[in-house]
Image (cartoon, rainbow, N blue to C red; front, side, top):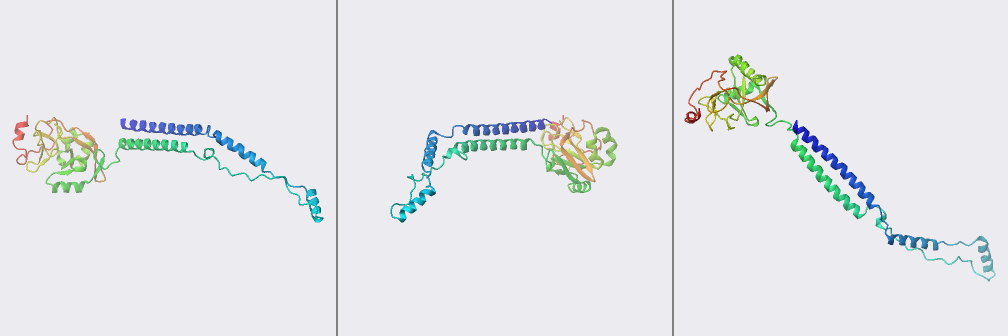
Length: 293
């Protein structure tokens, strides 16, 4: 739940930053629109208007044209001409500051856009880091496989099956032990036990060492400090404060699903629902005697 509130806070911060950026862009555009016409530009505009006014041509009237034609026929005059005409006005290109986007505006917008892009990428990275995993790895629900196939793999592994993606051990659990198991274990643990499979977390409850299996004794035996557990993960010896921890399990349509995000504490010392004893020599040897207090 705390992760959800963190993600929500990050999203709110990103939204406020986006609003602030848009406001800054609008203010810069308005500021840059003030005073863009320089004094030199205004002077050129006035000169151009004067040249246009001087270039207006006064056309002769019809009577003047007829009189000139008559004088020309008798050789006493010339064709009427217009008044003195000024040369055409020189083309003056418009000032770049009076139209389009100025260089100042372009640079300002570029800096703000780069800052906004970086802030957005940072926000997305934080959300992606805090967003819960979609599944498929440790800390999520894992579809381990069909119960029948898992039991066959356990038999093939001489009583033990390790699943590294879930950091878990799987062993066969006898149906005859279920009456005792129902008095010790909670429903999420019983789901797999009823299907005939015990699911244990690989870590020793003592100091967190990974507990390996011992093929000769058919127990789990921790090499760090000598804690021992039967195939059901129930403590048989050593300094561990309880049996091996469990995961919440489900069996849907004959498929075992293990929730590795929900760890359940192992059974208390003295629990022995299966009655299994060591079936051969212990793998840790003298370590069990030196640390089994």
